[in-house]
Length: 145
Image 1 (cartoon, rainbow, N blue to C red):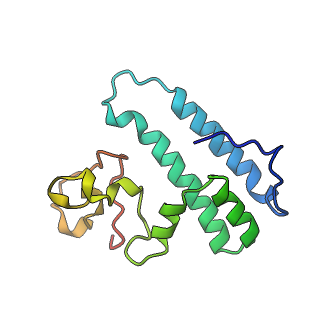
Image 2: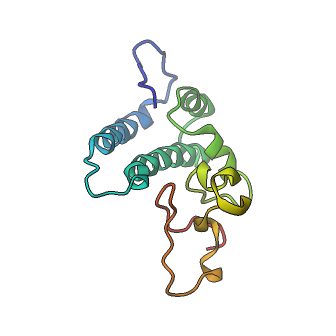
C-alpha cells in the first residue's frame, strides 16, 4: 500500500468519521509488516497484512452501505486506495458476500483450475477436517456457511 499524504489531497466533508479508525488500521498494518517472521512458513508471513487489508475494506464498505458516510467520501477512499475496489465489487455480487481475498477465487493460483478450499461450504467438508487457506489463512469464506 502506498503512503497516503492527506495534506496534499483535499479530503471531502465527512471524512473525519473514518479518520480515527483508518489511522488505527494504518498503525496495525505497520506493526504487522514489522512483525518477526521467525518460525513461520513463507505463506504465513503475509496473512496478518491480508487480514488487516480485508478488515479496512470491509469497514469502509459497511459504513457506506449503512449510509454513515456519503458517496463522495466513499469514492475518495476508493481513489486513495484505502479500500480494495475489486474486493468490494465482488462483495456486491451474489455468492461472494464473505470473500476474504481475491487470490482465493483466481483459478490460476490453484491446481486443476478450481478455487481455494476456504470457498467450499463447511457442510460439504468432513466434520473433523480443519481447513486453512494457503494464501490468506482464511478458515472459510463461503457464503453458504
